[in-house]
Image 1: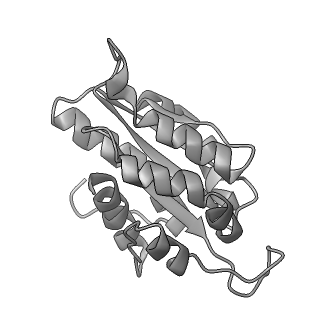
Image 2: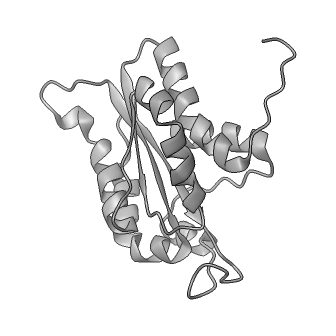
Length: 176
């Protein structure tokens, strides 16, 4: 409603991104779906818990959340979601994907991330990659930051400075 304020955490805003993307696609007349996969041990670990809490809303928006056994398998599954146009009679016009992993997982998934980035996305798809960095090694075995890995993989980076920018940046990343 007009003038209504909604308070969200950054993680809750990330869960809103696929819902907003689906709404935008529906307004365009597109029959799209979403696919989210990642590593549950990530510093973004509460992301999967919030996705599970919102599972009914996500399902109503044709968004599937399937945690990966590791970052590699999750990234490969997201890459596969971008190949919908290769099917003879696809059920959807496109699939937008969200991958998440921890910093060391960005390193170990470099091959699939590089190849998926090089292959591109479905015309009515798109992918958002989220890296849960841990520069002080609070939940990881080593300190990590993904900026240089993403530069090496030639993947564009967006660095939102607040919750509202998480929403905007998420939608922009899917559009790129």
